[in-house]
Image (cartoon, rainbow, N blue to C red; front, top):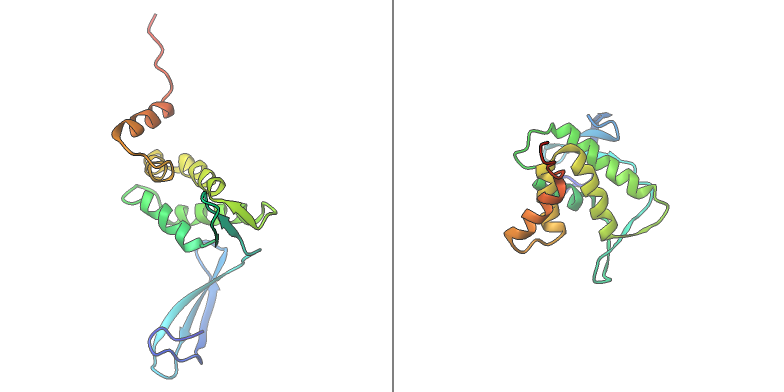
Length: 155
């Protein structure tokens, strides 16, 4: 592992333990060249996934990109960060276990929205606004209206 401080490729692992999510290994590393200390995480990757964009373009699946978009939608929401990590790991495991290496971005978006809807409706609407490309306030209103059950008239 290359040292992020000096670029030395000869770093040493000083401590390894399971991360909080129990699906990755946290490693404390030491660089003998600059005395720098840093942490890395190692997780199992079942297969290399390729995302098929709506325009047909293909790109390698990027867990970090998925995590960034979910964390943006969850910003300032009262959800435990560990719960978010578990959700992200669950989404990635679900994608990897689908049995296909090529996955449409639409399918990924649907899986993310399904997971967000179970955890936080505000984050769900935030993500949907980008995923469904809302253009006006009416788009939000229509979407939120679909979330709410119809009001029954009192008898």
